[in-house]
Length: 220
Image (cartoon, rainbow, N blue to C red; front, top):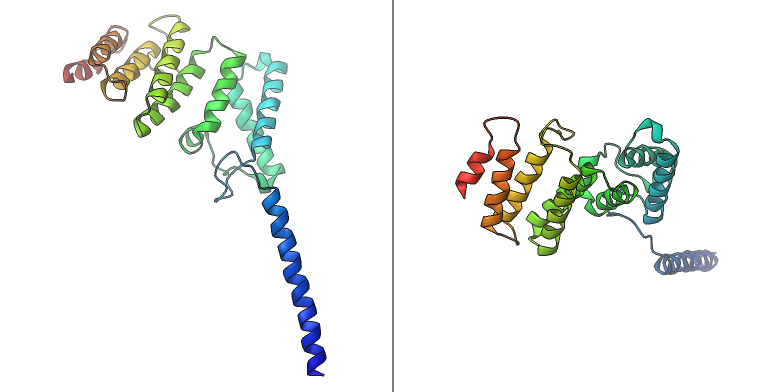
């Protein structure tokens, strides 16, 4: 009797190990491609993210009268997809600033698409520049620092006057000149003459007097 039980046990255990091996082989052939880190399960796959961008673009084109920005449609769709696809989820509290911080590549792609759809939008250039600026300070990569500068300069082209405010109610040109001053003051593309130039421009375009940029300029 014991012999029969042992034989049956070996039969079942060999089948189990065989199935496990088959599964592991299948997974190794078709790895999951994710848009962000998969170790926390706070992700959507790259194909799903691309699909969200396309759907957001279509909604923006259809609903222009609502005057929404592309990024607003993206986050609206991310929330929907999180409910529809729990296995490809984004953290429930994910907001724009959190995405910029944790998943900069995804955020850059959103703003790049927004610029593609509306090249006259200074906010999109400014927000993408902000991501490049953080990477610039963190890694000191000349390439990223220069991309930040380029985007800030593009944003300046589409600001109509010194009185125009950004989305936070701050003089837009002043804010950008200030950021340019910071980049040229202390990054891989350091140039104190340019830093001085942009701090001066920030002072001249600041509608809130006296300007805090006097301090920045004096520190040089």
